[in-house]
Image 1 (cartoon, rainbow, N blue to C red):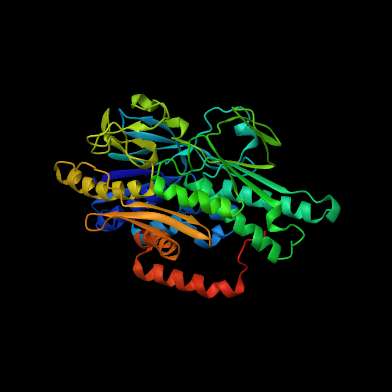
Image 2 (tube, rainbow, N blue to C red; image 1 turned 30 degrees about the vertical axis):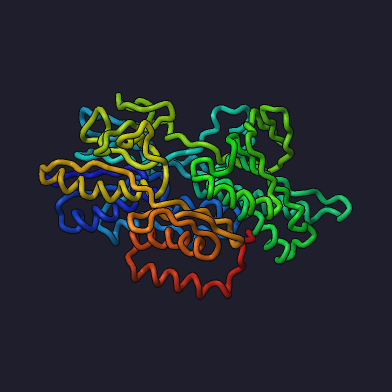
Length: 432
C-alpha cells in the first residue's frame, strides 16, 4: 500500500510542499499526496495588503488548487480540518457549505500515514473590547476584498456629498508590523489613484491614515536601522504614526488607547499579533502553547506524535541555543517545506530525520511606489542595508521565487509577460 501523506493548509509553505512531493513521489507512484484547504484558490498572503488597497486584482494572481494538483500529481480536497483521531490516523473535515447555507461537500474522514499541518495563523486581537466587532482583519482574500469594497464605498459616499459638507476618509491601522506599514503606504498610493480616476473631489490629503503601535517603534520585530527610515517615510507621506499607544477599546467610530487618546476612524484594520487557528488547541492531546501553536521538535514532528508534523506559523519550533521560537515569517515556512521534502524521503526509506535550523536571510519592507527598505544577510556578504529601487526589486523577486516554486521558471516568465502586456488595458487600481 502506498504511503499516505496528508497536508492540511494550502498557504505558501503547504502548497510548495504538496507541489514538490507530488512531483517527487506522486508522479512516480511512491506515495499518495493529498492537500486539504478550505478554499479553492491560493493567493500569496504577503500580497493581501495590496488586495485591500486595490493595487492588486486578486483574481489575476490567484492559483487554483485543483489545476495545481492535476499538473503536479497530487490530490486536492476541499474542506476545513475539524478533528483528529491519532489512534486510527484519521482527520475529520467539516462539511463545506455555499453562501446560502446549502451543503456542497459533506463531513468526511481522511486516513494518513504522515500528517503535516500547515494551517498558518490568524490575527490576534488579544481580546480587546470591540475589536472583533468593529475591525477588519487581513488573514484571507475575502477579508482583504471586503476592506477594499468598504474603502470604495466610503469614497463614493463622500464624493456624492456637496463640497461644503464633504467628510474625510479616516483609516486606523492597529499594529505597525510589516502588514500595517505596507498597508498604510498602499492606501496613500490608492488615494492618489482614486483622485486621478474621477474621484477628485476627495483630495489625497483628505484620507487620514493613522498607524497605532503598542511598542516603542514601528516594525518592532526588525532591526532599528530598518524601522527608522520606514517611520520617516510614512510621516513624509502624511501618515500619522503613534508608538507606545496600546488600544484598549474599539467602537464604531473611534479607537481608544490606554493613555486616554481618542482616534476617530470609520475604517479600522487590526494587524497586530498572530495566533494559530483555535481548533488546534489541545487537539487530540497534541501539545500546544497559549496562542494555539503546535509544539514541535527540531525535526518538525509534534512533541507527542511522530506521525504528525507541523510547520509555518501554526508551529512553535524552538531555535537551538535560544529561548525563542522560529519567527512566523514566510522565509521560515519556505525553509521548513524544503526540509520536509528531505524528511519524507528519509521516512519512506527508514532513515534518520533531519533537524531544522532557521537561517535569517534578512527582511524587506515595501512602501508601495514610494520606497522600499530592508537588509539582506548571507555568509559572504554579511548584512547589507538596501533602500529605494534596489530594495523594491528584491522585494518583488520574493514573490517571483514563490511563483517559480509553484509553476517553474518558464510558466513564471510567461505570467510576468502577460502581466506586463495587460497593464495598458487595465486601470492601475481596482475600481469595483
